[in-house]
Figure 1 (tube, one colour):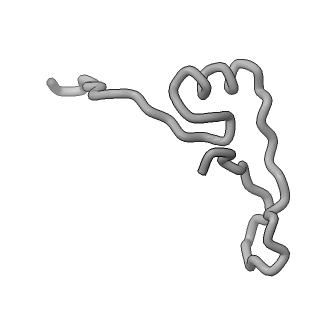
Figure 2: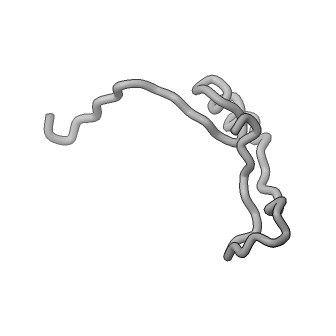
Length: 55
């Protein structure tokens, strides 16, 4: 299997929802956007993030 790809399963948890269907729907709709980090005391180089609603 030189250079081949083996897929053993699909799963996704992302800012547009949980599951492969939610991920693809969200990507097609381009409905997610980064938000400011909700913790004003957090020391982060990049103060924006994509929140995962069900996490």
